[in-house]
Amino acid sequence: MGGEADALVVIERNEDETAEWIAVARPIELFATGTLQPPESTTEPLPPLPDGIEEILGYVARMAAAYSSGLKWNREDLLEADMMNRPERWTSVTVELVRLKCRELGMPPKDVDTISEHIERRKDRRCFNVRSSYRNFLFR
Image (cartoon, rainbow, N blue to C red):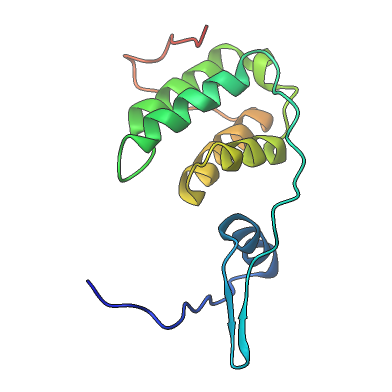
């Protein structure tokens, strides 16, 4: 590696995803006439999530941060098992609020998407394929 990039190019997949990426990454915008620094963050702190969900997401974020590749399959299984075994815990949170909390916790976009997809599956009452060793797991 050792080289320096003169620019980073983002190719839009769609407007919503690009806007989310810009909000999260807060890139320095490069123009022929100069650079534009990202504005100072003025976001309000998120409300606490109910029923231990904030602590669960914090735990998952810490575990994922310990690996260069992010969230591991066994942490996903723990999360899915809790969603499967304690559906009432997860009914009151929205996918968007969980996405925001995951980003606030510093999770990379791939992990935020993975957890959001699990929340969507729970909301849609779809099944989870949890390995037998984790099937009865519950976060306390």
